[in-house]
Amino acid sequence: MTELRTDFPTCDLFCRVIDNFGDAGVCWRLARRLLALGVGRIRFITDHPEVLALLAPDATEVAEVVPWDKFERRAAEPDFEPAGLVIETFGCRLPDAYDEALAKKRATALAAGRRPPFYFNLDYLSAEDWVEESHDVIGLHPRLDLPKLWFFPGFTSRTGGLVIEDDYEEKRRAGIARRGEFLASLGLEAERFTTFVFCYPTNALEVLAQGLALTERPRNILLAPGAAGDVVEARLRALDPDGRRVRTVRTPFLPQTEFDQLLWSSDAVVIRGEDSFVRAQLSGTPLLWSTYPTEDHAHRVKLDAWLERFTKRFDDAGAAGRYRRTADDWLEGTLPPEALSAFLEDALLWRQAFESWRIELLQNGDLGRRMLERAARGL
Ligand code: TRH
Image (cartoon, rainbow, N blue to C red; front, top):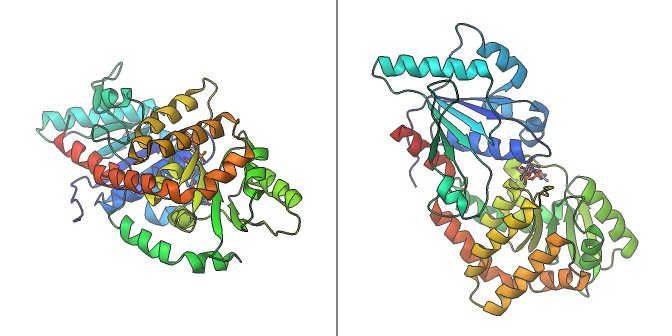
């Protein structure tokens, strides 16, 4: 596919980190994608540059990374110039001084008959039906003449799609071919069934450890850094002290550009959040989703909405029903260890649906491209 040539030379992308890595992870993946599509220069404004540095050690070579406070002060200076493309993420609210400078730039451009800056708010990912109604909707500023477009990533053609690089398929093929080499670099045998686990401390970790260790055929377990991995690792060592059933490895925190290799090297994954969840779906590796837990239980609604769409991809209604129960019970914490182990044993059974879903997502298209095409049309 040919790269889109965009005529937005500059972009300001705002990212507040609520917790964990997902806010910066989603924003940074999009930033890279926009640069690949021809945006000349990105200012990445974040209140937690250290989170970005972990995800992308090369971030400052790729974009101008500006701490939020510093940028807020800069935005109040009289000669400050906002970018032509502005992306607020997850309703993080831009500094007032920035909104004012942007409204001024807009007024000047309109008066001169030039294209005004384009202002997005990019929201969280959800498979819920209401997303299609809220996507591509203009919101007005309470005080200023500063319209902003609500844009939602998503799983259907009536949403913005997911970030998918043009060379994703090529990279995936190469990554799958590298599986043996990658697992060997971690001291693991490639012939073994391999599961990557990146979940939350609030998940049913005891069940997970017991289910992983419940096997006749020795398994490889890759555990991501973090508290959940610490607990599962300790339990696996207790359940299988001589490592006859499970060979457990803690993976280092890989740069985001290398994260896919964990998914391409696995036969099944337990995956969390938003960005990792998307990458797992694009990989086609059968997954159990640890939806980001919220106090209002929105995570259950999110999982249900996703299951509703995904399980349609199963050819076999019985398998679809079993998958749905497994996924629901995993999130609820009611999944018995035997069922967790059976999910892994039956990975081949799920593959067809995950492959078909992944193709659908690829065909549905790329969020970065959709944003630039939409911005080019103006408000
Ligand atoms: O880290 P997450 O749980 O983040 C979030 C946040 O909590 C956020 O507030 C919430 O809104 C969101 O979940 C739903 O999960 P996520 O989104 O998958 O982000 C993890 C990022 O970390 C992702 O970009 C992949 C990256 N990563 C690496 O680059 N290397 C690694 O080794 C690992 C384990 C992750």
